[in-house]
Length: 206
Ligand code: ADP
Ligand code: ADP
Image (cartoon, rainbow, N blue to C red):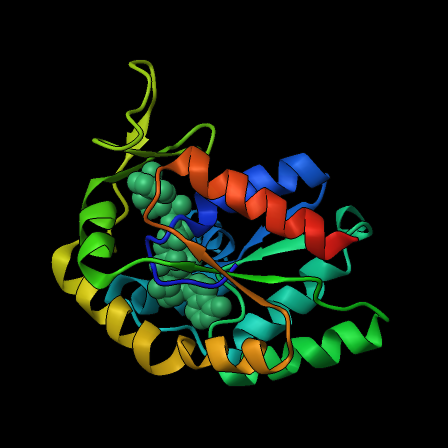
């Protein structure tokens, strides 16, 4: 899943993974989990996530390599938030070639910067279930145990958008050249985005 921060990658990745019985790999979730548990990896990346910058490619690629070899990825996986740089994409090509696997589809969830700011400011996550909500667009149930990500603050959002435009957006051309990119309008409502996305994944899986 490709797209700016706040495009709805996490929201949609969960839906696709469930529907097609695929593993859901969110590098952001893995980093945050390590930070929470204060592992060596967590300590290494905590200040990077706080600033909105990207974690070095070597660290991120090693983590994904490990994750892709776990049993639940046998049938495939939805990669959410990875790759985020051209070197990461090249490394992924190598990993998949070694595993005799390939990329079926790269859905590019397109959302304007102004909308990104609106979405991330209102994003809340349920600490217990990991479900993603929005105070206006996808209101949480009353018994949710909500968390506001510390990097969903105006200044960090700006930094993340800059990182996105300079380092991640070049992947649009990279995957378009490989013939696997499908653009999805991320500004429709959640259910319409998933209907369009599921249709595209189904077509690509054939
Ligand atoms: P977003 O909502 O911006 O898509 P993520 O949860 O995917 O957020 O990522 C949060 C942070 O984790 C990023 O700002 C970055 O610091 C780090 N991160 C996640 N995935 C990667 C990656 N593939 N490469 C480098 N850093 C990453
Ligand atoms: P990403 O993983 O790309 O950073 P998320 O899935 O976490 O994005 O979504 C960011 C925020 O936007 C969340 O608060 C989510 O509830 C909300 N959101 C996701 N998709 C939509 C949509 N199509 N319309 C309105 N809000 C959305």
